[in-house]
Image 1 (cartoon, helix red, strand yellow):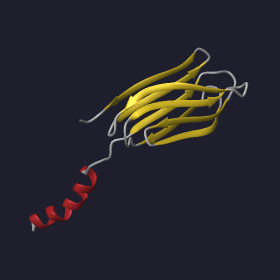
Image 2 (cartoon, rainbow, N blue to C red):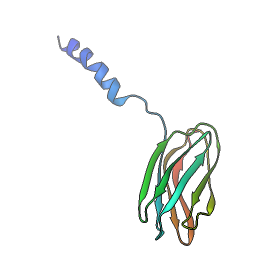
Image 3 (tube, rainbow, N blue to C red):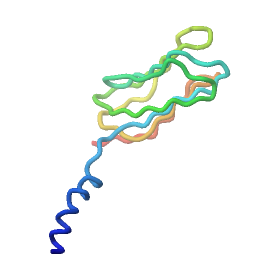
Length: 117
């Protein structure tokens, strides 16, 4: 009878300890006084973004890396000029976090991710 109870719990155990897909948890932060418009972060095989970001605000996004290549940031400043910044190189299967901070001094990339061989 005890074996049957253990077998009944096996699907739940598999569900809670199953495999998970690697992803990058990204945060785009603005430390500028005026709001920013049309923010896009490109990464290998896709991109994400938002229509705007208020002063001091953060935008969070999670993504899976398919392929390899450089990250890039494009945004519109308060004078309606397009600004660009080159980011770090990502390998397929990378996981971890990255923070992109936009300030009056420029853009700062803080990657904290690893790549599985």
